[in-house]
Length: 289
Image 1: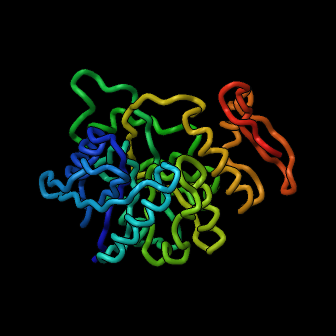
Image 2: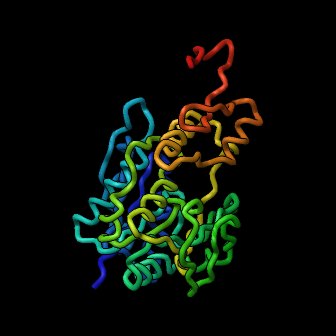
């Protein structure tokens, strides 16, 4: 019998986390364990919704104050596997689970454990006054998956997926495949790059990537900036780490958008392309070469 765990990491977003819990509790199959890694957030507590209990483990911020997204995910997966999970589903705190998300992931990972499997994610508009549907089956009426990612229909699979299109909003992995990959690189802290790095690491370890149409998720609306200027320093730091590990920069669309705003500039260093922050003349210490 397959033991399935769902892992989410969270800092704040308490209402979104509660809605995610309710969606999982009403799915066609409940996970055997629902585990939340609270990142510097003592307000996230263990709780039960219907037959589904939420357990919590905690992790502090990284040195320098950034949230340890990669390390938190690793802690969650490691805790779930140590507790007996055969399949671990990682679901972003903002994501509601479609009715068949858990069952679809459990089925495909058990049948094809040699891949990391991702499901289509719909970015929801702002909720109506009554809120998003409580019934996960009703979320299908809002289904409109992100156009930049593969979108197999329920019952369909996409094999040999592009690693640059992998994201950590929603995916599932077999415990042995996770052991071969080694998890997220914890040198990444803060926002950006760690999920593309995981996809590259998986392929290097002989673990493929795929998309499963039945595992649909729905990203609850929240305010964002585009490009994400509040994460500029994280993106530069993590992007350079990715370049050093894999030979090229990720997140090129964001970097070019930052460049168009005069926030960063491209230069060359000993390892090729580099991106650096443009220093405001009166507020930020001058960079050295």
